[in-house]
Length: 180
Image (cartoon, rainbow, N blue to C red; front, top):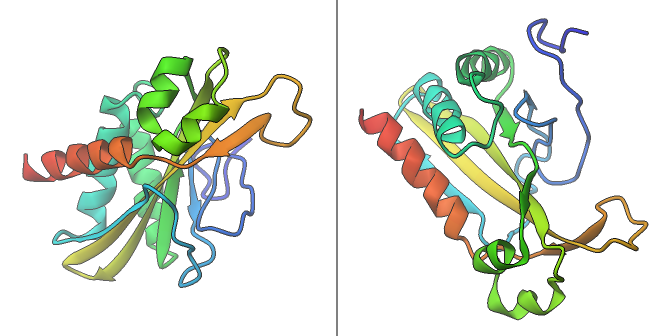
């Protein structure tokens, strides 16, 4: 099945904060101007055009193993395609499992009490919005989930607030890509 842009398969879910799309895929962003403050989220304006930021983001996600290997060129092209028709576009990483120690390293200390031996997982959303031809806003939003095996909720666990470390790593990888 082809995606809405005719190039890649995707699943789009509508959630109240920004764009949410299937693992490593893109869609127009939602809720612009209505984004809540999210612990750990990074929101910055880069002095590069949206096409350059889209390519750098796709490469950074690939480096960090947040998208399927070998898909970064297709992903960057899909983001550029969406940006040609919409004010913003975004990418969701693959869901990445974490053991309990790994999860504890990425979340705020106050939330560590909710982590069980089974650990959890995270997904990362990145939203690109063109400010003007030479500037692009990049918002990186985490979702960490402590697994709760007996949970019957849609997440299968408890969302935990990020400490902001991994988001800064992704931003660093994007800026490093832009500097190459």
